[in-house]
Amino acid sequence: MKSLVPYIIKMLLAFVFSIAIVSIFCIGYRYSGVREPDPYGVTDYKWKAGQFKSTMVEGFAWNQVDSLGYVNDSVPTKIDMLLMGSSHQEALNVSAKQSTAAQLDSIFPNYSVYNTGMSGHGFYHSLSRLENALSYFKPRRYILIETCFVPTGPSMSWFAKQILKPNETYSGLSYQLQKIPALKWYIVNFEIWANLGSFKKQQEIKKPEYSAEDYEKEAEKLLSAIKETCNRHGVIPIIFYNPTQMLEKNGRVAYPENKKMLPFFKKQCDKTGIIFVDPTENFNEMYASQHVLAHGFTNTAVGVGHMNEHGHRALASAIASAIELWEGRK
Image (tube, rainbow, N blue to C red):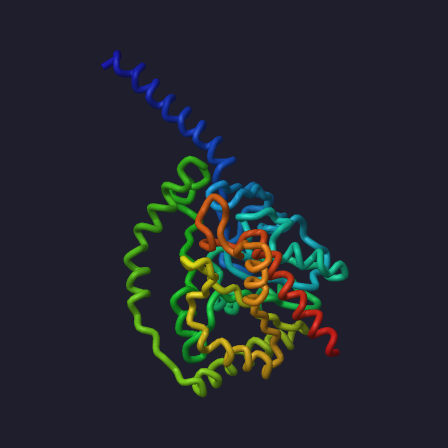
């Protein structure tokens, strides 16, 4: 038995050493760190202040989150534009200086822009936290909300019920182990695999269909509630669309989502006094002139995945044009 002790010690030391070596590699190759709950409810969770983040699996980026736990270079003393959105706007796949929010900040030198984009926070998720975001950050001019799909459903809330509960824990062995870079992605991928069953059940639920007239009525209810909330806080709401793209075999850009209801949604935005931004034309012009898509990276697939620096630039340009047009009318 005594002869086994040295071997067991060597095995343990080898294990610890290998974890340390792989962790050092992961910090540079792909590391996001761990999240913590947001006590103010602006988002379900945020990153630890000052945390380093890296990726070389989808794009190439190395960022450090700000003192509040969001991906910005710094926290302005006064915020004119507050941006809410998904992982596309969190923009961990590009430099923080290349995000939509950062480029808007450059386009409008007299406005300070702050980004609260966070993975897993889609359109309805952002809306459910709109009051908290406006109360805490107190933007002075605009609130920008991303949607990656054309909203559908009665009161636009059918899908919202499927995603509003945060799938995140901040305690226990699993959470603590995720602080070790070499182990984080094993644990995350296992949890994704474990939740595939419930995700497939959600996908199997049949979504009801609505006539254009019924759709407009329900859209008006939702958008009026958004406008009312924003009016109480003295800000102008902007909803910007981030459509999914794909490249067809003939080299043409296609948009797989059914946009049948998009004109009706835009119509209700105009009627309610909400600025709606659709960057599709900007994306098309960018592809025609530069032969680049808004999504995808050189180390992934063309047009697939998160927004790249070209997409952020085109989206920021579309939003800026809409703001300039709005302010020119006043």
